[in-house]
Image (cartoon, rainbow, N blue to C red; front, side, top):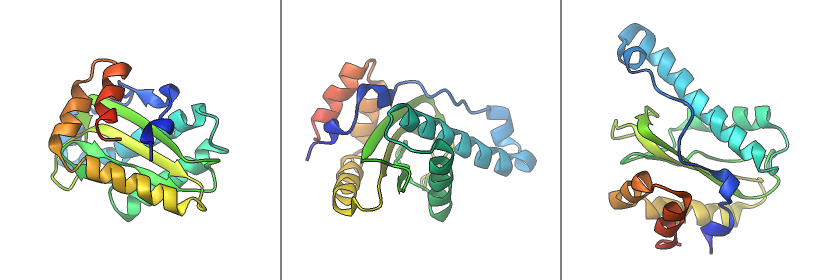
Length: 168
């Protein structure tokens, strides 16, 4: 199985556009709402990236599906990694996107750390087997913290792909 066949150049963003405001994220009154909205902004950016691939039928509905999936349980794995994923009628085919936030974004990680690497997957509901195989492979890959460190430090798409090829 080759994850690389699903990760096209137009679905790689080495600099997340969404930024975290350190003042608001520390404010106990505004904090919780701000952090929820921040998470939704990241998911919206992910939905937009998927839309640009042409593999999505409706960005707004995809965003709703991503948010609803995230509300069930955080897709942050810890060690600076999150894997937002959903099977949705909005996906025409299995698609993977990679986004990176050098500064980090709060994403409700189990270890409380900020997320730097967003490895996102969408697939149609009928692609269960391939979807589950890819998700398992991605989760296994990120069980080693050094993988996230390699992806965070990659200075180009080429370096990123080289690092990923070690695992796929």
